[in-house]
Length: 219
Image (cartoon, rainbow, N blue to C red):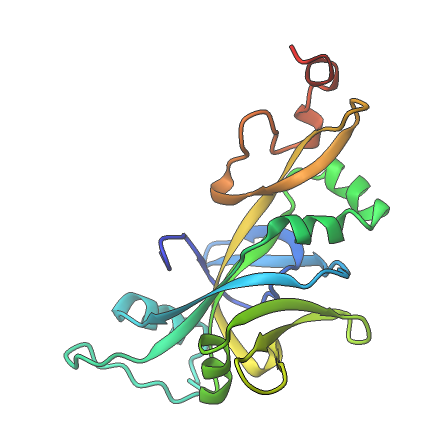
């Protein structure tokens, strides 16, 4: 549990905003990325500065045994090392980007088990962590040339700072599914994300479960 949300210990480096599937073997879970959807929107992120405890530090060591950032944790000392947790704060902007790709929407309608990386916990260089935690706002931005997302930290003074995920080490992540409903024409459409594994009333986790006639008529 990180910031009151369940996260999965990472065995790779899943990228925030990527869509894929979670698989499990005898030892761990693996997130298999399908696509990193293009998005013209700058998506606002929640940023939380966290402190390691023994359990979270062991999770970090499990994913980064070489400890590239030389993080030292001593349970008996009052001052603990920190990390950053990020979460999508505006899922509607993210959904608008997904809906720009008709082929992706058709695929998601068929595969109800697809999920989005909507939160991550990570460590990195001190200056990158400070840029995130001291920023007025942080956004997830899609780079059209690199075909991936980066973080943009808006500081009270100075120009925006770009922080790429390759500069960080993700040790845990959270996933959200999709929620489907109908539009005014009674067509099945993507509505929002399912935080906590549940959709709001009237929406379905799988597109195939949407009762178009019932929803359209208002029964």
